[in-house]
Image 1 (cartoon, rainbow, N blue to C red):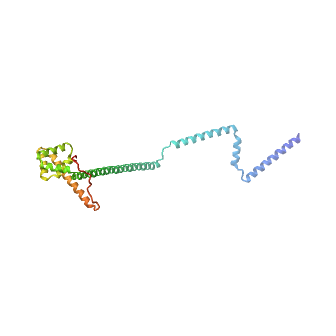
Image 2 (image 1 turned 90 degrees about the vertical axis):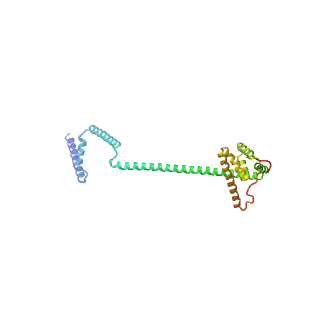
Image 3 (image 1 turned 60 degrees about the vertical axis):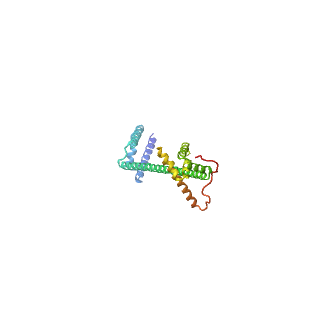
Length: 253
């Protein structure tokens, strides 16, 4: 029994010396100091269950703090230092939108003016073409009557018959809508007879009819003069006035 005790005591002394030598070696090599000794002692001072409970509590508190910090960031107001820059950027965008709207309005106005000018010019050209066609048709009518023997005979008869009879015939032609025939006949007869017939309209209080016929006579003379000048200006045109009429009793307008 004594031998067993001696063996146990010997082993205890050997372990104690080993621990002392190990501690001295750790201290000399810089692997052990008082703070680490206190930390090791603190680890073994408290039970594991208590340390685990403290750890869980600390993790929950940290999670709550992180969530609160995130909420503060999400709902925090815009920093005062950024308000001027944001306001300036918004004003710049507003100016850009206003300028863009104004440019679009100006472009639409320009397009509308161009389209309106084009429509007016197109209408003017259409009216000009219609006038040219009407003048051409009138010249053809004048040319046809100039070569019509019946028309020439009608002019002669109106110049020789009584004034009242001739005036009655002219009035019938006007009432039938044969105005150009009346103008051509008045142009073909002598000036005295023409003035006498126009004077009859004045005597009846139809001054407007006399004025209208007088204006038509001037337009007819201007049309013939313009046609003659155009024909003389073109040396290659040997027959400036087309001949579309035939003899055979044409007195219609």
